[in-house]
Image (cartoon, rainbow, N blue to C red; front, side, top):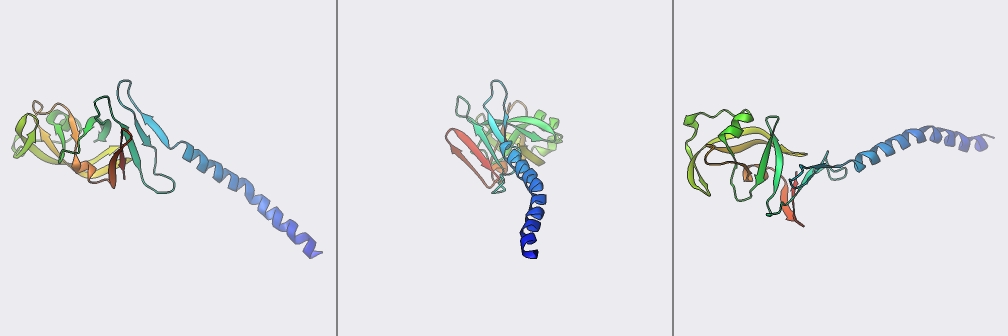
Length: 181
């Protein structure tokens, strides 16, 4: 008689755990379905930003579509402020003007401008500072060196190698820049 009851006991115990298993499975499927979020402005190229790390590799990745001129523009965050940046692999450092630096909380004194930077408009003086954190969606870097130039020397922000080198990889594929961390 015990042999006839034993399979039913095992089945009853297994059935007790099925609802918990189904809830966990449906949660993980929902998380995977909601991985990609689109970050866009009406006239700007679209950047697809994962909300968290890939569920199997643990890597975080951001894809930025090239604009009509082949440039990669995106909204970065620094000091809880949004910065529109042009990704420039030819720039050694992230470069921004003094007004942008002030807006994200970086203090620059006149005596800090002791470096020289080569720009499209010639050689200019620059201050070398460090930003605690620079991020784009799920991809971020800590302690990023930044060249700060006078406002008249630079009217946009360039995201250079001092940020890109902190990532595990970056590549261009099918008209998209893929940043991986």
